[in-house]
Length: 406
Image 1 (cartoon, rainbow, N blue to C red):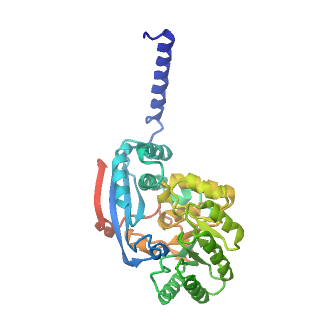
Image 2: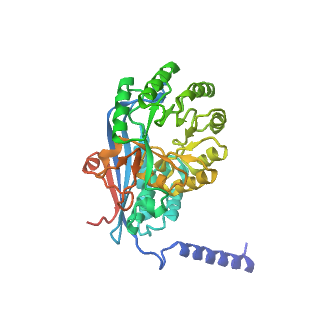
Image 3: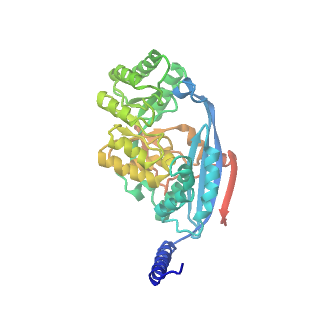
């Protein structure tokens, strides 16, 4: 069939619009730099001893022996460099690394300042495997590196680039309170954390025998005193009836929050607990998208939301979660990744907490300062950390895309 004049005109106009659209996406006069190389590394961080929480005691997972990290190091023609990371526990780390390698070349020649556009570009490059979960966790390492680079270009700590509400954040320790540790070990770790200046202590619960949980909570509360901030974490292993019974039994201990009492995706159950219990409810660390966090927020399922920047896809989506949380007046306590979350928590309007894990310290040349129960925002540009030689020795695989500069 012969095309009509109107059909040909429409096709010509559509082609012109498409060309104009793609021209708008190309680098223009406002671009100030371009990405010259992307270096990816798969790093395995060994733990000093196997770690178990309630997921191990219920047979759903094996003890944690090491943590896989995906590091991204991005360099530009102007000589700036940014470092970011994502991670996975027990499984998924190699998958993140492979996916990042598949999309890394999409960055070459791009202006590193256009972070939101680059995040969208990378997510769509791998959209066949979804826009949450492992695929966006691979993007997270790159996104975080771009934010690190942008803050370094500005000569500012990331918290200051975003606009800080405070120069230090309340911090609590988790790594000393696992179920694989005896009560005496947890007490020793608690004393060491308090002496170091940590401002709160979280211990794991979720034993098949709930009386053991209560005995451990009682011992730690007595050691800390009535006023010292204390949290417990059930790692999603209670059902709704157990959670309400345990929540009521724990009311007398003055806990700052009960964490992950139910399955991470049970927003309705968490909302019921938040209404029924005086103790605040915290959850969110296992969620991998802005939409999943919005479900928690709009249903009033949490008193403390606990997003994880590497898990949700980086700092770019994390900032959207922060905006939603501030609008709903929900407090925040980001999960793990303290080098990243310290800056984000400092930029959150409502006084937050940040989680301390000394496990991560060997990965970096710099250490975060803790004083008076708070973690201090470093005055170094960007995130304020650089990879240690030990981290590079732990690298299982490394690959560079583009031309690395000396």
